[in-house]
Image 1 (cartoon, rainbow over the protein chains, first blue to last red):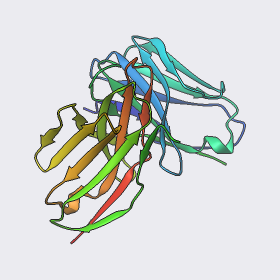
Image 2 (image 1 turned 60 degrees about the horizontal axis):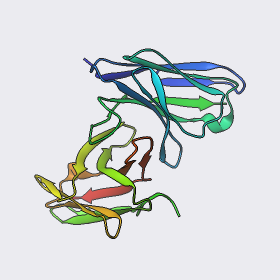
Image 3 (image 1 turned 90 degrees about the vertical axis):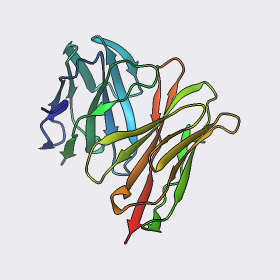
Image 4 (image 1 turned 60 degrees about the vertical axis):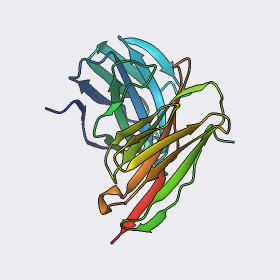
Length: 114
Length: 110
């Protein structure tokens, strides 16, 4: 069974559209994250939720809105997509936010905005 | 200056060689340190955490130098399967910030 899963794996869409990426973890972790990895492979944290509560909210356009319906799910909705949003988006989870807890990453969603 | 900096490489070394790379961080409040490995078109995976006293896991040794604010990763007897990008990760003590370095590409040749 996949520990952290994301759907869809690939997403190709037009500028201006609204899209969502879903993430689920079956590890029983309390903390979930969204990361963006751009074309230069730089991985940057966007959001972190702990027990459905937003903990980390980096400087991200408010077109990006995370939603955590429960501890096992953290979805990412993006409004009015722009060319610069093209990237690979990774979801991750860990038991805690602090300390040496390992983060487990999903396989990524490759978003291409045309 | 970036908060976490790594030499992007690529490091191209023969199989069996020893290779080391560093990662520097700028904020002394940083508390937890890690090395993650990312294969091409795959997700990052934890390679090892980095503890104050340094730690070893098989062919891999990680060190932390708080005075000079850097962590290092040493790979001995490198294998072809070690080819990947190695990401340095720094967490701040408040746990409200997690920063990934831009990665060091390592390529092991036969």
